[in-house]
Length: 296
Image (cartoon, rainbow, N blue to C red; front, side, top):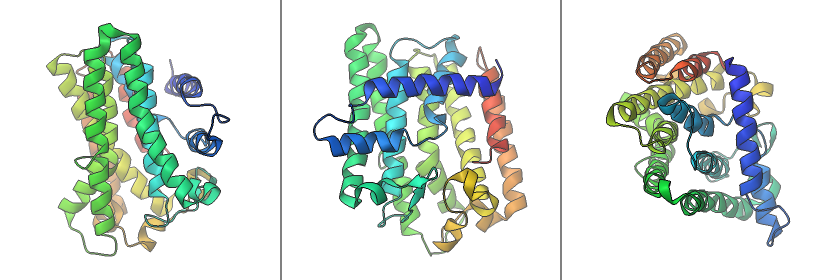
């Protein structure tokens, strides 16, 4: 299967599952449930949940029971982080995926509560899968812990805190690396590990997907920084040049555009090396190379 067809089919699967699992927009209180769906179904590549499925398939050739709930939980966490990231007290963004951000549409308090709701429902989804398939409950418990750590102060939240603290301040390479490997990289890495954990992967396979996720996450963030410099706003669905305006430390700001591109290529190469240690690596290899080609 061509990568474009794979991404399309898996994104459709994730969308169908999110449609089934999220509260109906009319459920009381309707405002928060409508806002949750507004955020989740506003578009997006579904890269993180697709990585969960793809890594499970790379380990075992297919994904076992409970994998789609785990994948949807990751997508809920990702969207919660975007909602809070867009708030005026954070990045103050008014546009996300070409649409008004949640705080613009539903107010700041509504956005905070919508993000909180998506964060908490993520763990409910994993719990539902564990209750439905007791044979996989031990694996799903590990998945729940893995996701909690990746989203917390030793992962995504920690990266966001340091990112905010260093806005407008000079930050060196170590701080930049910390921000990128935690704010963005932690959830991408966890997505890969979750796919392996739900399969009960052995240590060698778990290490391979972990290192794949680390290198993929860094490549993804470097290309994200580059797109914020010279991407097309109509494709990105958000403002270009906002990082420089807020004084954020990025790879292009610290290393320059050309060296940053070379670093992204190097990280993708390393991701491919680790993918090829798995039983069914084809999709992961294509996904890694896709990171360099993406324009949004």
